[in-house]
Length: 173
Image (cartoon, rainbow, N blue to C red; front, side, top):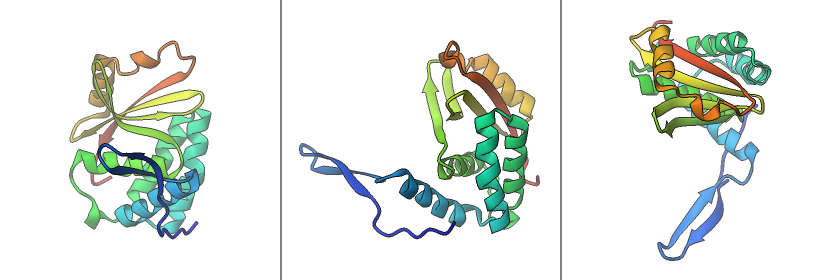
């Protein structure tokens, strides 16, 4: 899907006291197109890899198939040219947030709760996915962090299945 952006923000409200207009996307299609444009510029991944991401990742997350979701995500990230990859945790956190947002998934970065800050939280009708990213550390360390901080406590009793995803970032892989 190719999309072009041109003046697609709408005024959602106006604060007379501050003399400020609040802008928003008029619909999901425009929001998704904007995220896609950012991701194209940011990741520079091949189109074939992008098409697989667009179909397989949402399907896996809506089914609760975390293995398929992570394999799809890893495959896509592996297609990003090494020259543009930064050795910073927030680079990957931003890329993953853009991916989820572009796909129309409810992804919230840096979710603040009483025990700390969740790197990313992806919510579907039936599932909550809590992501913790670690650069130069193990996935076990990331999972330990989620468990120590009890990041999913606010969603216990919600009736949703809760997933803890510790992501060890390896720039070379």
